[in-house]
Length: 179
Image (cartoon, rainbow, N blue to C red; front, side, top):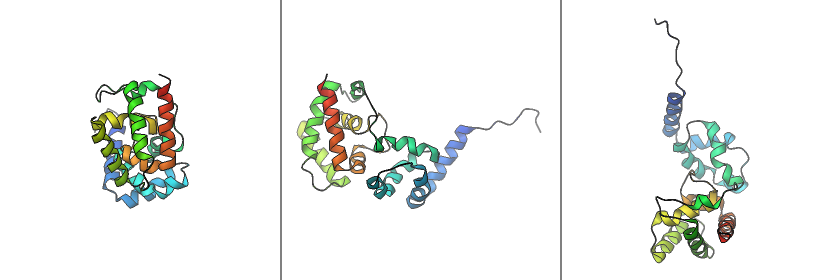
């Protein structure tokens, strides 16, 4: 026995929870996590299993889910400074060149699946001669309005759907036009 009081370690609890989530099957996690998603669109509800699989390794508590996916419901306000990324050598000016080129590749796309989207973006990257991170960063910002998302650009495009994705890219282009 010790005279000192017990210490409860919340960081350790979060780690245990995240390990528990990772050990769950994707289906079990999706079922358990859905009530914590909050208000989601019908389109997102149809793709919930796909989104839940992306969320599973990124959350340590069910309560974090609504905050992580809030940008799917409504694009948050963001400034053009978010388009800057030193690591990927991206500036708002460079983003203003990249987004219209990617939009032109995505608009005619009829098969809106992760594989088809990925192929179209990679073709655009090869054609432009830019690095992957240089193209993906402005796309992530225009689609989500945040630096960190539960999935890559291809997943975001798929989950948002074609109409919503193109609308968000156009908003990003309009934001950058004011620079």
